[in-house]
Length: 582
Ligand SMILES: [Ca+2]
Picture 1: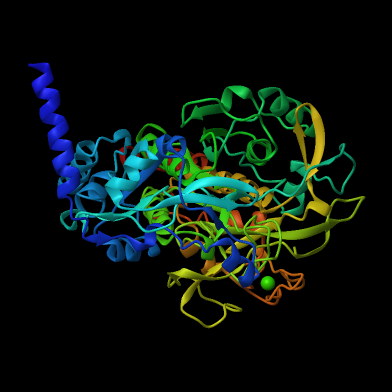
Picture 2 (picture 1 turned 180 degrees about the horizontal axis):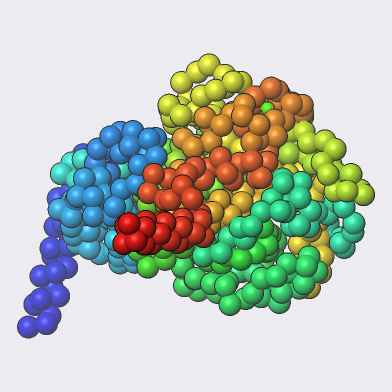
């Protein structure tokens, strides 16, 4: 009986595989990869095909992939997000997230092709699955080859996948078929260092002073900053850092969520910088680290899924900091669009996402750490539903710690997106003409030569990169959101529509000089610029500007209202007494 059943299933599987007409080609799911000779002729470092035929062992290797589904009414959703609207998960499910019917149809097809579904998102944005390379190649009718990229070899698709025509309208793309395409960390190399007086390597208190945040009452209390990165920092490094920097923070407020199973890599700097700095700028708040084991897009997207599904139970999680990216011209368009659906979903929930703009200036190469690429911005910083954070070179007075000069850092990523149209809120003095989304939105200290102090593996280091400015901004946002909560306001949410109207009002330190060179094509200048955005924060002015008096909240503080009530009561009593005596 069992054998008959198995034979029947096998026959069904075989018939199904042969019957698929895969009439819908998903060209945006992969990027073309030239043969080695053609790449050499093109003269730019990029991925190349080294061998077209896979060994049996390579074909049998497991590959993880993600079938992303199309959201509905996306332009309507984007228009609402641009107006700063919040949308409840129930409405997202009813109007915008993919339908259950589409989801089931695609999931059934994957299961019938023999794939193991590894994660199903509550938002139905993607189905994560895995299977042997040979099986993926047959099901999606895509060719795989050995590909060389950044001194490592990968098994990657070299032709676009296709799916049955009946599924075409449901599917945005199949991501993960080119595992050599992955973002890089925005971290400049580490140099041994110890703490000093005012000046590099900077400590969180010195940066708070430089950005006028040191006299604020808010500490980020009842806020949690989400960090997505491949691994966890060592808790002993966190406590050593807080101690060395005089920061009052506690491990009890640090939460470590392993998104992808397996052995996590050892801490290497990025995870440590992100957590040490966000937890110190907002020393009264918590941090939730989502570890993805590596920076493959399929795993990073699983972290976004996890955050979105966590939100109903984690109302304090209102800021997210991401310190990685990849040049837009290197990325597959379906991956960029898939991530756009995640960022729109996070914005709909009022989560402010900060993304480092990159360390390769106006022309990041494949590694992201030099200026060898074409003029381009990086994804996901270019997404209109995140706040792109650029970098500056910061100099302070050794005695007072007051800022003496702040200029654009030559590594600061900036320019115009090739994927995203410009949101209507991105306007103001200095914003150049054009129709595409501009990067960055804001900036903070990032230059590694005027860098940040961190403790890694028990030792002190100086680091830099926009990986520093992004968690700094996430910490500042936690202060803003705490102040908003105290005033009875919802979290600030998507920052763009809130901060561009403030351009020219003095709440930002306008960065006037420097460029994102060497060879950089943009210069800093008056107002908005493509190196530092609106500028660096002046928190003592920015925070109140983002905490307006609400219509619901009383115009007088509670003690004044109490006094007023007592006074009225007393007057009423006097009036009553007069009536009685008259
Ligand atoms: Ca400027």
